[in-house]
Image 1 (cartoon, one colour):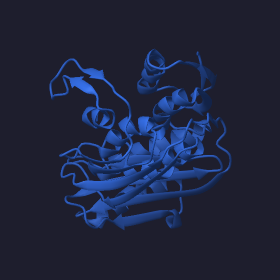
Image 2 (cartoon, rainbow, N blue to C red):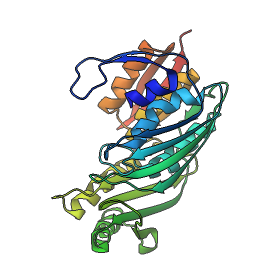
Image 3 (cartoon, rainbow, N blue to C red):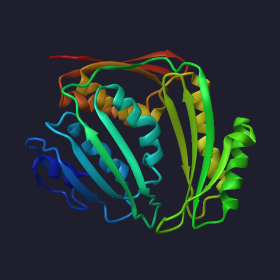
Image 4 (tube, rainbow, N blue to C red):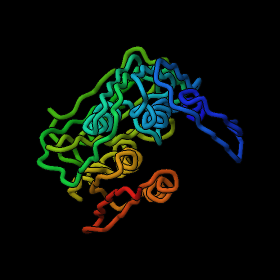
Length: 291
């Protein structure tokens, strides 16, 4: 991620090595254009994109990116989250971003690849996302690559039991073209004003039922709170709102990731954040420019 950020702005970097305990990053001017970034392992390519995307949203020209590595990793947003949740919200703010998955990459084999087209904006429009609106569609997809579909069926059985969803909302997808084995459960909730997605990832030694139960708990917490923004999306909206100089969203009680972002980002940008509780497990975050 650091090397990709350096490449798009000609930064001077010190300490960008595995095991380093200090990092110095002196950025230059952002350069739009065509870039290929390969993680080289199953490390998350989606997190590399989220590192450099904010700068390219306001770049002096269009960009086309090719990213290689993991696309469906634990502790990182899966490609489907980018496509269905994050990118549509960014596009509401003025830029035009499109993403296309060429092949998936699961941990530990990696080998995934996707492309990103970015038409920047001269400025970002503040995003107001304080109401979820009526739930319009729901679905759960269990992906399996080079594994038995029985794993996906067991995960969907948990979704059916814990969320009470009908069979017609559940689908097994056997992924073609993956360099290695992999499994992901993706629970998608589409509402009037936002789409959210909750994921669980298969890991060696972890039962399919446990993978599904974790994703179901996240989805159920979101549904119970009635907010538009889940806790992972909240973390990822902080920088776009800061660049826009305003906006707001309602979310769940803040994760440590989000709380850290709210304190850290104003040290780099002329923005302030106010987080106020507005109910049990509900917080409203509002950004305002300080310039």
